[in-house]
Length: 78
Image 1: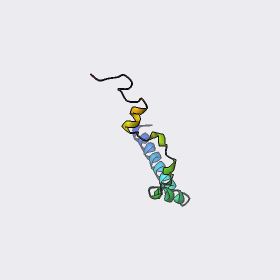
Image 2: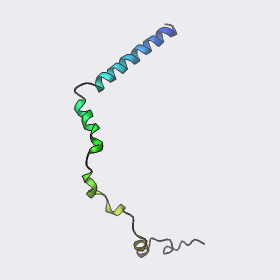
Image 3: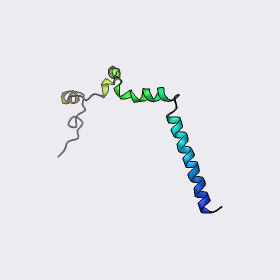
Image 4: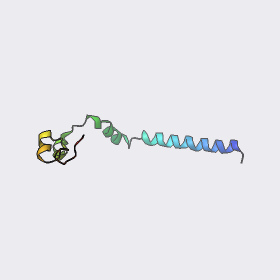
């Protein structure tokens, strides 16, 4: 088997793979899934109430009262 035949077989296999993926993507059975995925950017974000409130930044006064500031821990910049 020479190089030209090997390249021809590889080209044929790649064309078959391309046609298979194209057929899969445009099949009628996949259309509802792709339509749903296309509308995801327009979905409402009503789940904002489930966010972790402890991850919100605290004020400097709250940090000082809780001992979180650098001066309360003894780490002073000189």
